Length: 64
Image (tube, rainbow, N blue to C red; front, top):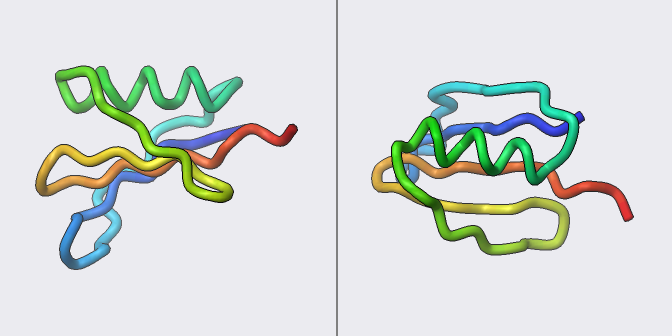
């Protein structure tokens, strides 16, 4: 089950972890609610990434 990992964009320090969620989509939606705005997500190989300075949001992608 996916989680949202919130880290500091510069230091990489883990600030918070949200979840678990049923799907990566639900986790990304929760991250936007936490950020207080709609986030623009980029798909990496195995994760989704978004940033609202100084926080970086990461969500593991759903398995195919």
